[in-house]
Amino acid sequence: MKLSTRQLNRTYLQRQLLLHPDPRPVDEVVAHLVAVQAQEVDAPYVGLWTRMAGLKHEQLSEALEDRRLVRGGLLRGTQHITTGDDYLWLRPLLRERLGRGGLSAFRRQLDGLDLAELAAAGREILRGQVMTRPKLAKLLGERFPGRDALPLAWAAQHQLALIHPPPTGVWRRRGHVSVALAEDWLGRPLEKEPKIKTLVERYLLSCGPATHADLQNWAGLRRLRDEVEALRPALRVYRTEDGRELFDLPDLPIADPDEPAPVRFLPEFDNLVLSHDDRTRIIADADRARVCPGYSMVHPTFLVEGLVAGIWAVEQSTLRITPFRRLSDTDASAVLDEAAGLLDFLQLGPDAAVRLDQPGTTTS
Image (cartoon, rainbow, N blue to C red; front, side, top):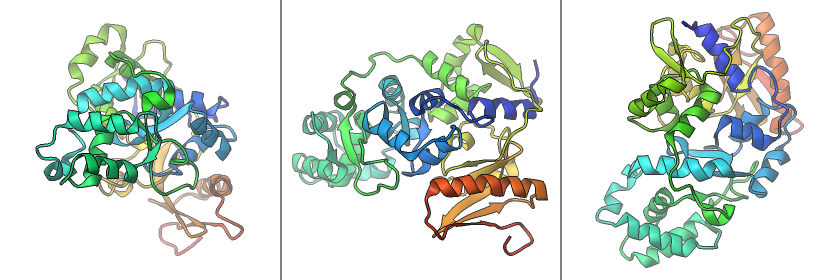
């Protein structure tokens, strides 16, 4: 069966909970999404607000504090929030396949260092403790004299399954990052033999139909083609308009291409724009570089008719919206209506305002 780009768009929005607000508790929504990007402290709050029915800041903060949800390095080696249950299989699966990936910036400082020895030292230091990363760095520096302390802490975080407990990652809280061993924080061991099958199925549930290259892009892994092919008998196969194969779970529906797609605001680094190798189902190729201008930045975006239509930013107490192309009066009104809700959620103060910068005009 061939799927149009429009069908893929609406199906993706449906599975990403962006067509209708999801009424489930925050931990169940995060479980559906597998992992919510959390590179920036407030981003997961906005990403969940735009997908849920009436999310309050304290709902996510409390789920992090009572350990239903945890924050740590996961997909693509970056910070994500996931459920405690999912962290226990996802982290070891990703760690097993990443090798020394992610440590290239510290290659010279770590040259000749036995990473297994470093990990053992880090585990001993952290056992039963929650401490800041600078303190971990200091204590590791004492164990490995002559080495720069900060690269030691980053390498230990890479080698060990570490959670970043609150107040790290809580709304508007910034400062030193706290670290703790995942098995201590969650009170359970990591899975010994996590399965790629679990990764594939959970990915397709929230991002499918997709190619093996899309899966690799989402997870930050490589060489998954053979393992996805081994699952082919249990998967449904579609084709794109240009003939590429897409895999999906057999019991999941394809959305109606005529389903209305409301305006949605997404935070920086949101997985919606990062979860596929071919992202044309959600963003035009011509606009991709404006959203992702470099390796280390993915701007906050907004959707009109299901596609990324521009970016937004907070400048002091102003929510500034910049469309890529001039919006119709109807679309501009819908964008401003949704922006008013975001403005309330962002809590920018009594002087907060929205500014829509339509192309070809100065302000609106």
